[in-house]
Length: 362
Image (cartoon, rainbow, N blue to C red; front, side, top):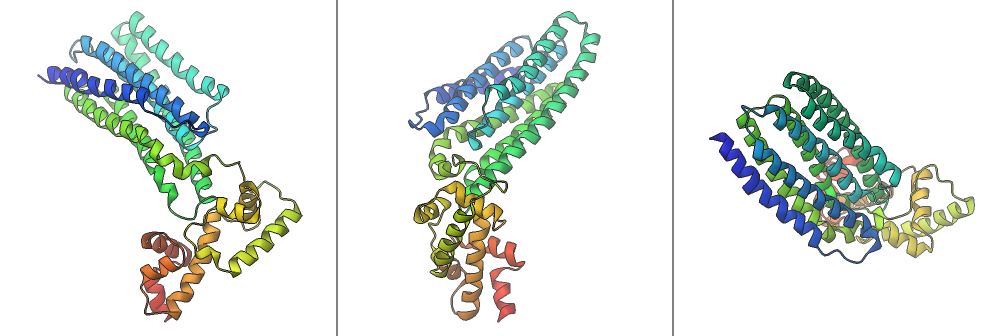
C-alpha cells in the first residue's frame, strides 16, 4: 500500500512539479541585463537539474520496492542528494555573488561529485549486496564531507554578500534575499534527511521524504523565478567594485572625502531616507570603491553602521528635546524607513529600546 502511494506521489506529484518548473525556468523572461548573466546560467542549471531529478526518479520508481531493491533505492537517494547539494549550493551562491563562477571553481567542485556518482553506480553493478553495503558507508562519509564543505562555502559567500549590502545601503535591503539563506538551510536539511533515508531505509520514511522534497522543490522554484523582481533593488551593491580594509587610499583622496563628509554631516543630509553609497559618491564626484574603502579603513565601520550611528545620535537628541513626539515619528525624522528597523539599530548601538532610553534620559 505504501509502495503504491510512494510511486503515485513520486511520479504523479513530484514528476509533474519537476517538469513544470523545469519548463518555467527555461521559458522565464529575463531582462537583457549583463549583471543578470549569473541568473540566466542559474535558471539553465536548475532546469537541467530538475529534469535530471525527474529522470532518475522515474527510473528508481520503476524498480522501487523497499523489500527487494533496497540497495538501488539507497544508491539513487545518495546520488540525488549529492547532485542536489552541489547544484543548489552553487546556484544560491551565484545569486548573491556575481564573481563566484570561474572555470577553475567549476572543475574543482564538479569533478569530485561526478567521480562519486560513477563510483556509486559501478559499486552497485559489480558488488554483492553485502559488498555494496560497505561502499554505502564510504559514500555516506564522503557525502558528509561534501556537506561540510558546502556549508562553509555558502556561509563565506553569504557573509560577503551581507558586507556588500551593509557597505552600500543603510536600510534593510539585505533582507530582500533572506530567502537564499533559508533555501540553503532547507536544502541542507533535506540533504541530511536524504542521508538518513539512505542508511535507514523504510517504506514510510521514503514516502515522507518524497513529500518533503516536493515542498522544497515548489518553494525553491517560486523563489528562483521571483529573483528578477528583487534584483533591481540590490544590483548596485552586489555588482559594485570590491573594497576592503586593505585598500589604501591616496592621502589627498582621504582628505577630500573627510572634508566633503564634514559638510554633509553638518547640514544633516544623513536624515534623508534615500541615502545610499551610490548617491553619496555622485554627490561627492567620486566612486563607490573609494567611499567603501574610506569607511572600512578610516572609520573602521561599514557604510550602514556609520550612517545609522549618525542617525541614532540625532534620534537621542529628538527623544529628549521633544518628548511629545512618538518613537515612530523620531524614526521617520532621522531617516529610518520603518520603526522596527529604527528600534533594532537603536538597541544595537545603545543597548536599550528608544522608549526605555527616553524614560531613563528624561
